[in-house]
Image (cartoon, rainbow, N blue to C red; front, side, top):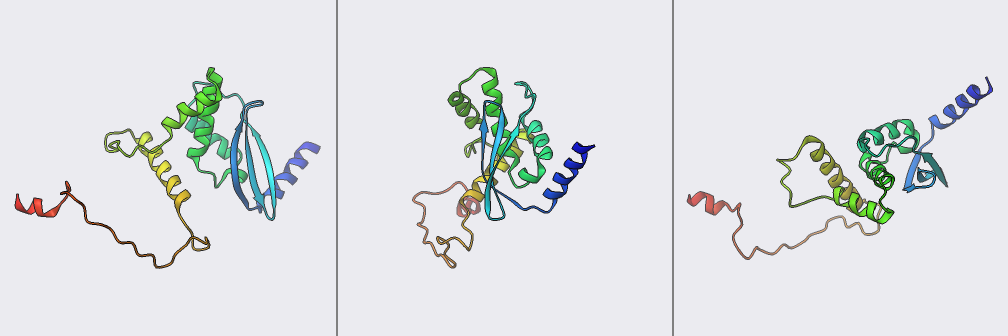
Amino acid sequence: MMASSERQWVASKTVGRVIHPRKIGLRLEPLSLILLYEDGVKVRKRSMPIRSLKATADPRCRAEEFKLRHMTYLASVPAVVLTKLISIAQQVLIGLTITEAIDKVSEHFTVNYERDLNTVSESELKRQKELMELTFLNNAINPLDPRFVYDKQVTFHRPIGPSDWDEEENDAN
């Protein structure tokens, strides 16, 4: 009886909280995600254990399950970040060192600008779009940033040679 009332108190205590994640990382022993977040004015740390992770499990599904289980803390963390961390943990479980696992997973979780996205699977396309969005958000400058310029004007130089998509060539044919 005491445990259930205690759980209700904790659940009701976290309902109105606004969590702002700062950093997220992976701890291997014991296997868990570590989240640094702002809760009001304080910076707090939360450790979330990753239970019964199998090396053959789909990391995307596990990341979504993990995000649902810890929704209060991980609501604004992109799913692709959690998927990448769980993939690294799986590679370490297989037997790779942490640097080898990071290198192997980083190849899979980088935006490939040379790849034709019309020929990839739906899941690969979704992952590439999530990675592009994450890159955009990391590079975006909001109006409160001191580097923000309101009416920025940039002069672009004309290309040296003809482009594949020039209209003049299409009109001539």
